[in-house]
Image (cartoon, rainbow, N blue to C red):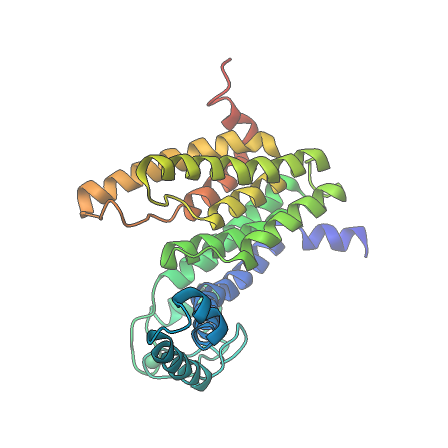
Length: 310
Ligand SMILES: [Zn+2]
């Protein structure tokens, strides 16, 4: 490819526009990915309930409940199989209230929502402002990455990682799920990009970042469980921090952990005190980790001065 063309493709303006369009796709991912996962799990559970051999080992060979569970499993499997197909590409985007298929000009990032003034063109049902916010945020993040890293492979790698982080953070916020399909590719991308020297992180630093990222949160979660006897964090959080460690190097981890814990604790205390949030209902940690990761990407060296004595 021509160097001039590549420089243009990775310019803040071009990457910003690409980010707006990717943000539109992220809205679909954020909405559908958890439903697709939960459908898969419901199907798995249905088949598991019908597994006589396994149920026999769990409940004992003469359990009377096993037959009822198998019947429930058959009912659940039939219900799940009867659902209309759902993937990231199908069905086309439509209004959840009236089913109106959204035309391409209504689907334009940010502009479509503004022109519709946040309402469906057919039934006037409200469309959440979160859609244009996600699109604008993704566009701004892509442009900022292009501005910071210039026309380099690092700009492409960190834009892609930023898009995955936005999806992961919002899915976690909505459902407290952090899909492996999002966290593990971050880890792979970080190690691969470090190996190819596409990012300013050496391969050993990326590998140690993945390792320390995973096990530092694992140790925190283990300690918390030992003290409080409940799970404070889930494995998805460990994998997300492993991905950030791979992308940014192990040196970024203390800043990410300090920042995300401080902001997470402040918001958690606010929710408990001001909103009556139940103390034992888990607060998703993914959005804070993702935010800490983005902060470390842009302000890494200056963030380190927060915790390194100088
Ligand atoms: Zn409608």
